[in-house]
Every structure is written in C-alpha cells, then in structure tokens.
Length: 88
Image (tube, rainbow, N blue to C red; front, side):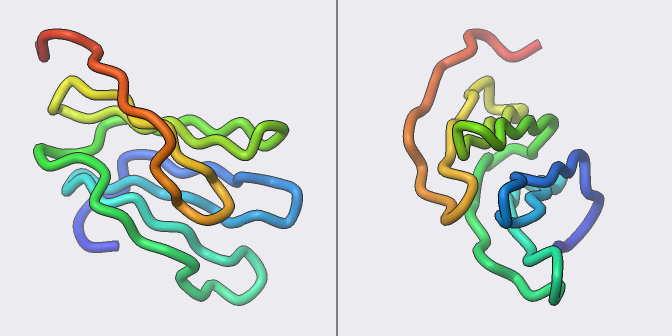
C-alpha cells in the first residue's frame, strides 16, 4: 500500500489480512506468502477505520467521505454502502 496504513486486521479462516490506507485503498494480503489478493478503491477522501468479522467473512471500512462500506473479506466484493451522515 502507498502511504500510511490506518488499520489492518486478519479476516481469519484461511482468509487474507486486510489493510486500509489513508489514501482510501483497501488491500488484502495472503498471510502465508505476502502476495496481494486484491486491491479496491474504498474511499475517495481517505480511509480512517476498518473492522473484520471472520465468522461472517465481512470487512467494514469507514472514511472521511462519511460512508461505511461492507465488503466480502475473502474476495473484496462490495456488498453495501451505508451513509453515516455528515462528516465531522
């Protein structure tokens, strides 16, 4: 990832390690090889937070754009966008 990593978590169950950068990029790395599994433009104005739920294969990201996005952790498919309201 370019720039600063703001958050990282392991998806678990053989899944990747996911990381979110301050530039808003969500990337997943294979924990065994370190190879990139996927990369997604998650937030245009910067990524600030990330949480993973290994049991449900979900990753949630939040950014300065005021949107929370839910992703499938194993392959990076965008599942849902939730408007969190006005950005601070």
